[in-house]
Amino acid sequence: MSTVAKMKVLLFQPVDRIFVQVPRALVASILSALLDCLYMVFLVEICRWQPVAAAILSYLIGGILQYILCSVWVFPNAPGNKAVGFLSFTLLSLGGLAITWAVMAVGGKWLLPYGLSKFLALGLAFVWNFSSRKFLLFTKKAAADDVSLTKSDTPKDYAEWISTMKDVSAVRKTMPAHDVVWQG
Image (tube, rainbow, N blue to C red; front, side, top):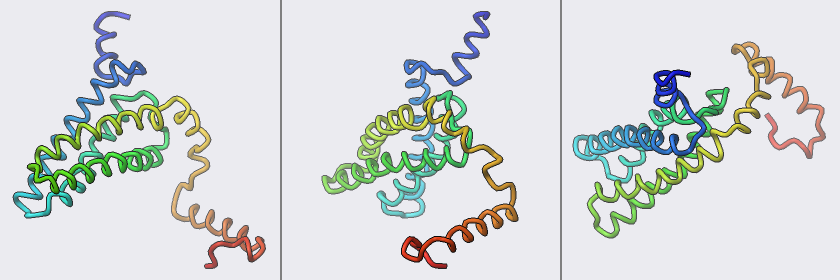
């Protein structure tokens, strides 16, 4: 492989090496943080939101950008099922959101400027987010497990989904009454 080809791979394609992933994740986090912070300042200064509420919403907006960057640039083992991947990513991001909320709340009690509290929250949330994504979501095992959820297993359209639900309902009716959790 030529030097140019190696550079393209190194710069543009997801890689397995953590020493390349960390700087990429940092770039993705910085871009997401910029969007997050700009949106938070907009909500606080222009829309007059409370800083904690603004930080939570802006964190989620930044998370969308970060998922896209992590899936296509940082980690090579993105889940094949994008809906499951995004849901898992979002659930793991709730840990970072909890860190953000806690730091913003404590910073408010200590009368720290909200910008300083946000900066501290970003650093702590980065450590959680990178670690949880690297070791729980974007793993070879998670990508391999995703093979079991193929397109043939998922409904193609609304009619097929309804048919699947009818099958589940028929199975539920054959269960003894004490095993049925929900009666609908």
